[in-house]
Length: 541
Image (cartoon, rainbow, N blue to C red; front, side):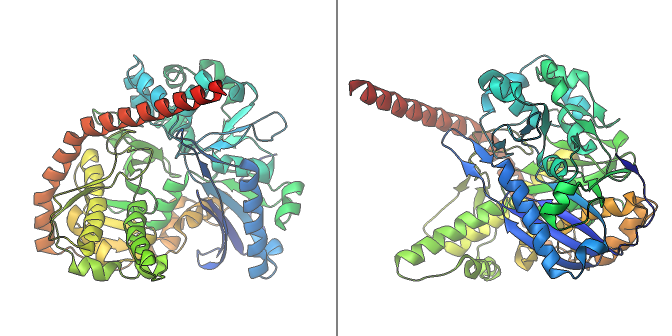
């Protein structure tokens, strides 16, 4: 049974769960937003040569329950003190459950690229522009709509055995409460209309999924409605049955909310520099600027009539990890053992010695290509302008500049550059990276002191749902605004340099598209040739 608002239950703790692709975190906050403790459990996913990226749904739930139990070991009397729980998680992807609420195979993650051919077909369909204008969201291989359409063509048994199509946080909510539901953010940018936050039959028709409309769950707003923690989940997690559980919005929005994307100030934006790069600005639904290329996302905020206009880079710090691992591997070959953390600690020093702006780097390191501000599953990373004078610090510098240029590319697609940029994500701890990003955008940056912004954003929804705050604006005023750091202004010379470099960066990535596509055709031909050769060898035996 749903609870429509709650009086204060007497608890003094809110728990936010943030289920990322590789780590699930459970974080305890007091009712005023102060972080008390956190527990983290590594999650695992698998990739295949066919572009697949999958995750065990059962293991993900078990990892979530373990994180909550570990949090209970850190916080005295956690179960009796918990006023509410909220859950968010990685976005996109397809998590199918059957009639017994058990998984129908492993989840297809947002990293899964198998739907590329289906995306190409749908993008050229007659209903694509109408779908985009309703959702505000460009179609790509990450999304559940594209993945379900691809399943219908290639793995119809998966959809036939399912009774509900969920996202990661929805799957955890099902295990926590027994309720099949999704939230307004993922529902509207995948299958609906961001203006009314409801499913849209024209969108579902454009995706070719009319026959699977019954798999879409009820839409639940976690600032208004909660469901009680089930006895089964209470046993698994160590918490009390009946504790209100709020279904958060998608993790991108929860992280941005916790980091300051919406504080009532005009001209601000928020970038999350994590495994992916997420660049967003909060606007009224009526103020959304839809581009001609059908790219980006429009994702609802848990605030009436407010949405975030979003462009996302498929890979952000994954590029930094790659270049650091190249250096680390070379040192290992020379018998020098250096940890990844040691390499990360040198980034600011390398940036200080890099020849600023002397190289171009396009940060499309993901095997799934790029999705913002353009969509091309064949896009790949690369340096332009290398000479014998360049050294390792220059490569590191170029990679960081590439991330900053990609951010500028995304904001340019949404309109004017931000007047102020709020930063979150692990890479935001680097002063050098903040300086490059600030100069590339041409705006001061501020970093939130919030350690776990995603979990905090979800917990804020629970705080409103149970009546700790009358509305989200009041909650933001206490949980978010006071934690924003001082503005760090960009260096004028660096700003001028990157303003000159950006047109070349953008022109180069447009010019490279036919090269990426040709290389992808070659890769596919090589795989098909290898498969044919293997088949011939088996037949010969």
